[in-house]
Image (tube, rainbow, N blue to C red; front, side, top):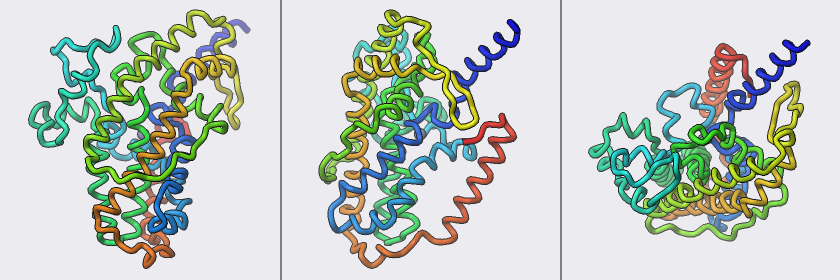
Length: 343
Ligand SMILES: [Zn+2]
C-alpha cells in the first residue's frame, strides 16, 4: 500500500512537471484562442467583415505554432527569447540573482536579424530564442499576403503572428529562468500562463479599444520584450514569497481533467498569487490583444489598404485545410508514439 502511494505520488509529480507538454512553453490554449479571437474586434470597418467571417479559423488556429513544434525542429526558438544568453560575459545580468540592468541588456541585442546573426551566429540565436525577429518576419509575410489578396496566406499568417505576439507578452517567455528551474520553482511557467488565466480569465476585461497603426514595428516589438523581461522578475519573486508563507499542504490539489487525474496548484494558492500579481496576467493578455490587432492592421495599411470586400466571403482553400489536417495527423502519430500524451 505504502509503495503504491509512493508510486502514485511520483506519477503525479511527473505529470505536474512534465505532463504539461501542450502548453508548458506558451500561453495555455485557452488564452491563445481568446487573444486571437478578441483581436478581431479591434479592427477598423474595412477589415472587420473579412476577419469576422473567418473568426473561427483565426481562433482555432491560434495554437498551430505550438503544435508544429512536434513536426519542425526550427519551430521551437520562434516562441521565446532568453536575453541573458546574449550577454554572457558582459556581467550585467545573472538570472539566478535577478535583473541588474534590463535596459542595457535588451538594448545590447541587435534589432536587425542580419546584424544579430553577424554578432552571435544563427546557431546561437536559435538556441537563445528568436521571437522578436520572427514576429517582424511574419509581419512582412502578412503584408505580402494582403498585397496578393491571398485568403489562405492572410488567414495562416494572421493566426500565426497572433500566436508569436502573444508569446512575446509572457514574461517567462523572455527569461532564461523560464520555468523557475534555477530558483526551485519548476512548474511556474504553466502556472502563470495557463492555470491563472484559465481560472480567472472569465472576469478579465478584453475590450481594449481600436487597433493602432504602428509606424515602427521593430521598436514596438522589442519594447514588448523589454516589458516582459522586466516583469519576469516579479513573476518569479512573488511566487517565491507566496510559497514561503503559504501552508505547503494547501499549495496543490488533485483534480480530474477528462480521464486524467492531475496535481495542480490549488485554487486558493492560485488566487493568492493572482492577487499578488495585481492584474498582471490580465494586463499582458490585454496588451497582446491590442498588439495582435495593431500588427494585422499595420500589415494591411503597409500593403496599400487592399479592398477586402472582394475576398471577404471566400473560405480557406481545401488545399490549406487538407494540409492542416495532415499536419494534425502527423503530430498525433508522433505524440502517441513518443509518450502516449494526446491533447
Ligand atoms: Zn508558443
